Image 1: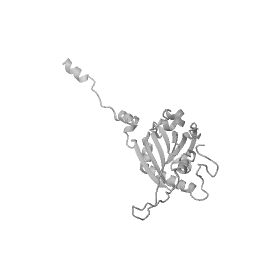
Image 2: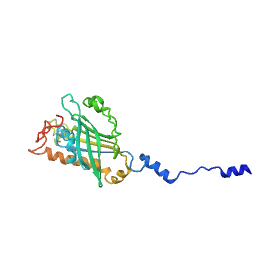
Image 3: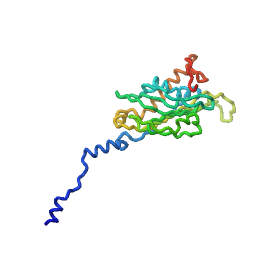
Image 4: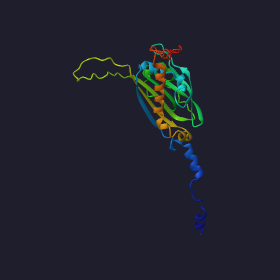
Length: 247
């Protein structure tokens, strides 16, 4: 009888309450729908010198004037001089906004002169060679800078000359030489993971299109600043208002 009584009153294990399950799920954000990592890319062939396009991409202070969802952009740190005695952006404060929300966060920047501009936020780390970034040695191993929008975000712009020779209209035995046009392949890669499921939900409709939207906006800016006799960016990287990137 006593054994039966003990078995009856012994506390039984209970299932976790819904509230505790919800609390754990919310804290463990990576498991929530929409906060998984995403990778997007877009490419354009533009009829301009790669050096001129790189000048525009490295002008981080101007991002807010043409990139969608970028409300403000300000370079706050610069690199040491590179082998050509030029300095490049190494840190910037960016304000982004969409759907009535606005957030400001800090990005680390790495510039491979004439080729790559990379911006990293949150836990993102660079895969660029340290030997190509000697001028960024002071910030290359800097710790991650957390923010309220992204767990990690990496934005990489890459430019390279795209040499195109117009067809001759003759059989392949035709050895005539035709001057190559100044063209550049511009490639944009975005890798990001939201830290807040609210932002993931708000951006769900537009997020897959962001890379294409950004590169189209850049193409419009390039056309505006590089075309015609009043072009704002010259071949040496200077602008019509005297500003020079990598000065």
